[in-house]
Length: 195
Image (cartoon, rainbow, N blue to C red):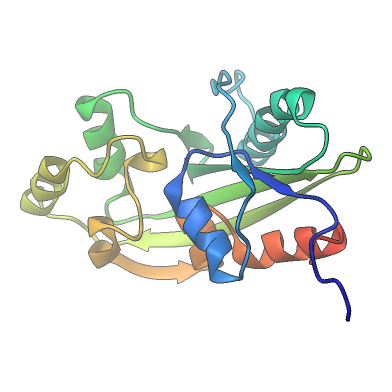
């Protein structure tokens, strides 16, 4: 009988229940879930692609110091308008500004993932999707803000929530917009011999 157990146990370096659920879609159940608290402030004039990749790698590094026997998967999602990085809003005023900015425009949602192994391998992938939001009325913006869904979300929204009703078009990875691109993640895990 062939043993199909993973070569290493998996640590998901994220407190996001959405990432855990997305892994479960293709049969991956992390052995440990643990997140690293890092400074997520972009550097001055930092390129959004470089920023999101840096965040995924920097979230991975402190976990490697204390978990030397696991594959470690970390990720970061950011919303990008032009060259502006929209992270998690600090308050309702900032969230409203983000939603008003996204209204009637196409923006990018970038999710970077980083996978490392106990034998020192490290690999990253970047998913870049275009998302078009319909022009929102003041009433729709007020309704969205009152829902509280903006809290703790990159770009002040989650596509699987209320904002999904206002999305006209997506070009790219839906799961990447949610927070973990399943195709790229599956490719990385396969390449590292997880399956």
